[in-house]
Amino acid sequence: MSPGLLAIFFSAPAVLIIAATILVPFGMAVFLSLHNWNLKRPGRERFIGLENYADWLTDSDFWEPLRITFTFAIGAVILILIVSLLIALLLNEKFPGRGVVRALLLVPWAIPSVVNALLWKWLLDPNYGLINALFLEFRLIETYQAWLGSMPGVMIWLTIAYSWIHIPLATLLLLSGLQTIPDDIYESAIVDGASVWQRFAFITLPLLRPMLSIVIIFEMIFALKVFDIIFVLTAGGPADATNVLGWTIYTETFRKLDFGAGSSIAMLLGAITLALAILFYVFLDRGVEQ
Image 1 (tube, rainbow, N blue to C red):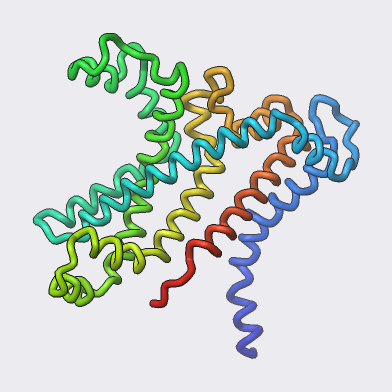
Image 2: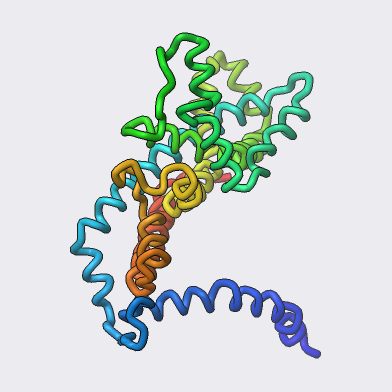
């Protein structure tokens, strides 16, 4: 058997799995998005082309959730990037127990996202939540608060709850990037009299830029398609204040049973995410020669 046929033979199982789990559902979603396909009106399915897309692009029920989605995503990515970079810089230093701290960092990441959401729902409960108890103990509030009951508090806490489970992965990626920077560069900078800030701004950040771009791209993609934490904590409320596109897709598809409309929003969200990923890759991953 030739090397080419042998490669095809061994890669065939992986290709079949990818086709079954990714390509087939994706193709079905594209197919549904081009049809009027509502399970409440069986037998009336028909091909309508791009009509679903045109309807959404001229409907405020798409643009408002898109604005909320970007507001959430930008806030989450900024928080994740800042906190994970600070933790990565700390873990890159030598101190007793560093290995234990690195291991503990994986605990939030190992928790399933729905369990994480349920944990934060308990912490933020307006009647017995630990957050209220701690804030009351330190006299930061005078009475228990419904943190998820109004803006902007609900968006702030959603961002914190979401970021908590995503910070470990971003930290590990940035830590791996920091460990590739040679110590000789820092030693030379110290000899030349560079301050801590100058070493960070002119050595660490430029050399960490490729890994920073990866973290930004990944976290932006994850944040744009957020759904589970919205489902558990707010269900799009209060008054649609957290009605992100992921929640809109769920509502259209599984509550209204309009699979055509839901699939078209999913395709639009996928196209937006892909476009942003390409833009970030082009503009963030330039100029650093390794």
